[in-house]
Image (cartoon, rainbow, N blue to C red; front, side):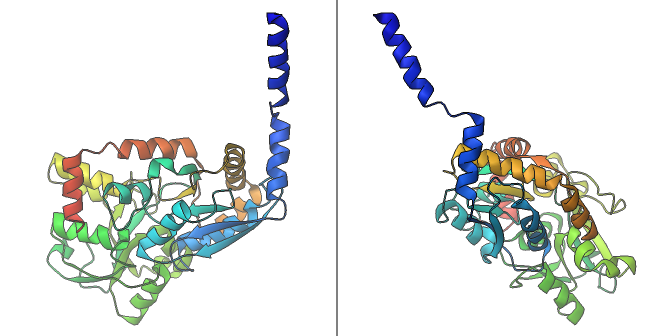
Length: 340
């Protein structure tokens, strides 16, 4: 009798087992005829916007069911409006994803603005490399090195006070003694570059990639001076430009500046909590397949993007390590970036 009951239970359980093929078909059925929206938290024309547009052109071909993929810009609070919207408001069915335009986890750790989300609960699907940020000015600016910027004022454009285009130069003012006059209020990197052309600002602290994609002629003609770069190591594009951490005067400053300059989470692709696991797996695989797609590689190469696939797990591990930052160090970071 006991054997019959066990057999019956096993047969009933087997009815509920979904094979990989069935799961794949279910995902394809869900996405067929639907639209997937990639949210970008800054204005059109910048690096993140351009990358998202290229990604949208190819991503749908790799998602089961081949949905339409569009890009929607949701500008404000240095990208926090888009982040909070995707986490709290947007559908949790796998039709909405986000490409953050700055350190999502870092901003949460520092308590920046209305960070109404938990980085650990986001689903990190993958990334496209580590963003190399730099503070760059026109060669005609009053100062063309970071040391000179400690004695001469430079007018630096910024997106808003919540963006790292604002907080990074502010940290340098407070920790290293630079004299940046930071002017927030621009919609994105493209608008700040236009302000540089008009003579409104001397430069800004943003992504080096933006110069390669938006103003390659300025690079070729030597019109720019790179004061400092923010990355885990010196970029091959700027081998003679010092890292921010190289200006540290003690171990504590070294830890703070290393935290600020590093981050593979900046160029991430995330989905909100609550998305069904099968769709998450499909989105993650589609993202990886897109990044490695020869047609996508060719298009991003033409656009002068440096793209390196980063797994979602690697980003997740990085985020978890940052979440362990000591409270006293976090408080000093907050003070240096005007968050207290």
